Image (spheres, rainbow, N blue to C red):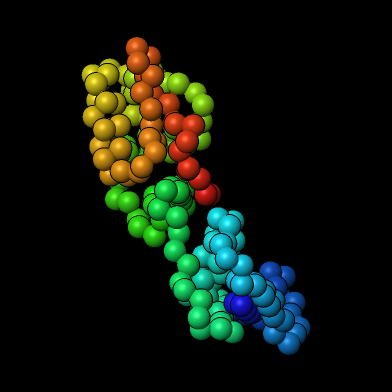
Length: 175
């Protein structure tokens, strides 16, 4: 069982925007209790625990465990998370180092699943121009596949047309 207590941050000046005093209340606390006795945790529960751990690590909360026999939770390596704020990609617990174009290409494809794009469409939408050699897209797709190296294909080739995000790809875009 894990318990996370999160206290709100006090207003830095103790005043509102109209220079009225703010009455400080006793520090309210939100306590979240998660029963981890189940055999397997779901991906959604894993994500919740990751977020609570990040809050605790940032100093905005406190994380305590009732039982020490729980193994640390690791993220599923077959799930690729695209974090748009810091412009980073995570595969399981690993941060994948991508170039700007590789990141933009992956994000573009992940935001438009089940659609096939020609090389010229990708050059226009991702690169911002269409006067480059169309095989440039092939090079970036190959590098992206090599860096992510997932068991299931991430980007599939539609022969004679272009590329699309694979139906089996487990990609989430988090804003």
